Length: 143
Image (cartoon, rainbow, N blue to C red; front, side, top):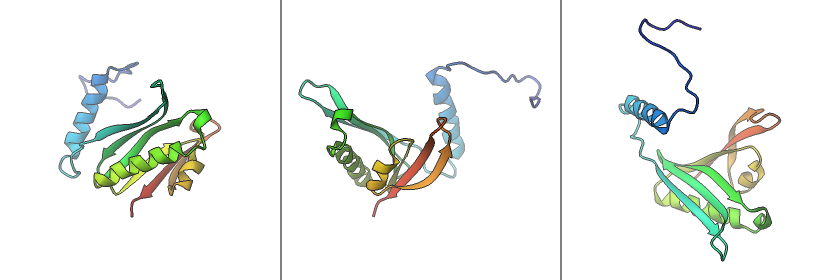
């Protein structure tokens, strides 16, 4: 391991508190402040609930730097193929377009066919993440 300057210690922190990640983000954004637009993300969720109010499908998204990042999408197995996934994706894209976004991006290791059918194209891949699978990175530019 490379030596550190005198007076400094490198430590591994198991399960660091949320404040650790927040401080890192704050310092990174301060460093970038002179060259990149300010980081001002806006999170949103789209929910599909049954008559009892149980979540049956959902999408979480993040709008930042004029792009939509699709963080997570889930549709109950019994509802897959019903169009709910496409409807949520379209609603998220509409929200992004209304906010002035240029496009959307995401990563997946099982649903690349679903996203390709919705107009997303692969721009990168990470083999064996997780082992035996490939993590696909896809994006879609808005017209």
